[in-house]
Amino acid sequence: MSQEPDMNSSSLGAAKSQLRSLMKQRLANLSQESIIAQSSRVFLSLLKFKPFVDAKRVAVYLSMPGGEINTEPIVRHALLSGKQVFVPYLHKSGLKPSDGPARLMDMVSLKDIKDYESLQRDKWGIPSVDAATVHQRERSVGELDGKRSEDVSLDLILMPGVAFDVDPQSGAIRRLGHGKGFYDYFLHRYALAASPDERGSTGRPVVLLYALALKEQLLLPSSGESVPVGPHDQPIDGLFLGDGRIKESPKNSAD
Image 1: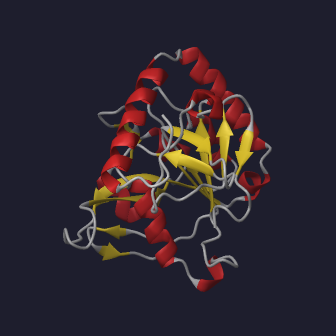
Image 2: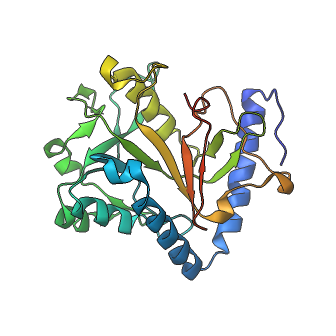
């Protein structure tokens, strides 16, 4: 699937949907043993990654039972290391349809290992925060039910994705998400909420954006496949792969 340089919104959406379907079929054929082994390599890479080691506040997705890197060892290690761990929470936005989406993703804090182990799995098998406990938690750019909260800055965000590639021109790591736009809109809100001292020289928040991926999720140039991107798709700072590699965007390409 080669990328057209001037896709309109409808053809861009169609190209993304086609790639998601292809990747879903491809990842469904992976054995649980391969996913466990690749997840372990990503975990070991993170343990040697200075921004993760030094981070005080880390946001990390809670993984599905299959088809992506398992983040349970990462969450447990981060909590036991004394880091403040934030995980996704989906909620009604309280926004008018003309002002934004009906549902938002926010990042809310886990209290400890016991709290993490108490999370119940949703219909996709993903551990999920109980809505009744959300107002007891710290959160980042929380607009829960339309109410602003005290914003909490993050040092590192570990993101999921469906497919990734490297832009042949800029060298930036490109990400294809699951199609709901939760991370894109969260990052947009996070950027708007960031204070001046939380921004780098380019004005972008200094939080690092890294994704975790099975090696099969990285599209190679030789495959003829690429990640379709639009003007609102933000490059990420880097990508941890299940074969132990870490690929990083040039310093200026994700700004």
